[in-house]
Image (cartoon, rainbow over all chains, first blue to last red):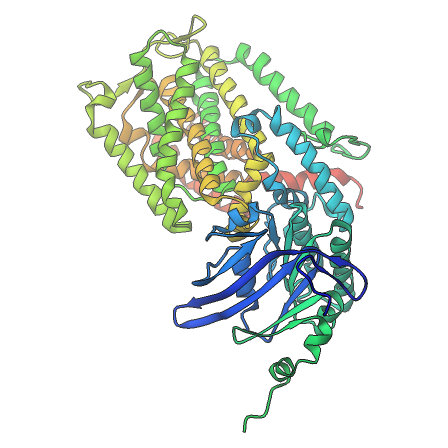
Length: 273
Length: 358
């Protein structure tokens, strides 16, 4: 990747990638004596699909949790849109435009698909309790306006037929899609996906990959994802961070990472002599 | 066949967002409203009002309030009796301090005061969950009852320690006190029930309700998508206590007229309202009504059948009543753990097809 400049770069398939939108600087995260993440730095650029990979227990999910504000690292800085982000609660991070999905689906089981996706619009719906109580004015207007946005997302992910179904009744693959819909409804500037393909069959994986690419393509959403399926990662992502035992052992395009000796050692094992 | 949604098309999101999107439901709801407001007041007598309608309406408000907290927001509360007492004593102090102000305003203000107290006792919910929160709200229950018993200012230094409602009017019609006409008391409560139910429904189908349910279903995920848990839980406590306070105020001023706090607003009351919510159906406004109706009407019905119909002695009937009500609760919960509201939902789904098999 020789054409990498502060303004961005062009990917192999000709997409223009913008400037840095989020930068992690020397992040260290400890739980008591356990060091989950050790001195990791990387950046995420506008419009790219950035993958974080690594063997089990490498600290990938912890990294995602740092980005989404769930953990605050002991050392290091998170820079977002050119500003250093102070330690924040998760809901404050969400209000800044970072949405995510979870490894184990975290939908609201008792609510319908529509209501679940509507919760994604939380940033835009600011009507007071009184207005909501009488269902007039701002509250009613917001419901209709945001419903229109949500319906677009629902159309996009092809879940129209289940909008009024309680989420608890849906099969796994659809739940994953609803979760993506909820994150997308927020119109996030960065979308974090924690193992979006986990537990899916080939067909569902293909569908999900298509959706991820379409989201990136149509809305220009920056995506950071964790995934174990190497085929998917190498096909989808523009740049890959590789972690092992909390350390970064590789960073670059899929091709660069694939040929990195440290990465090969981490995945295939290495003879200790 | 009798209940159908086929052919009921909506062309705008406003239509789809209605309280009753299905035409049949909507008309049935209007019919019930017309009946309750225009027919019932003319035919009821003192017995019906005091034995059936007032307790049903007032408990329905309390159940709606508690349902918002437990059913929609997932925060278990055993402090309902205490919060009802706050409503009752607030309305008493307001009635005696400002005799010329309309009862409507007093009752609403009592609700507002209770909302404030509810928020205060809701603060622990930010740190503790589930059974532990239930115990914390239990503390509210005992503390509030103790407070109203021990601080004479609350009962205006009366010798008996009781509070009793003086005569107050709305638009010149007495609502409290001995001179109250049955229909006036009934209508007064009915207005509150209707407005409370509409407000509760509006809140729960909008963003506030979604935030509450998100907290209930998975609080971590709720926070990650941007729900402020502090605000969501405290608004649930505030709104819930507002309704419970109104019901407490009505229970004292319109229904009983005189109250001794430990007796009327004790822990039993908290459990009774909680049972109404559980039997009626958590997370359902209709369920709140159904639960209140079940626990208010069933004892009356049993008493009338056993004592009036079969001529049994009153004490035997009273004991049997406990047994039967208890057994029925268990049977209902085994048959449908999600309450009467779920039973109703299943019935509706069946009625959509009936009498055709597919």
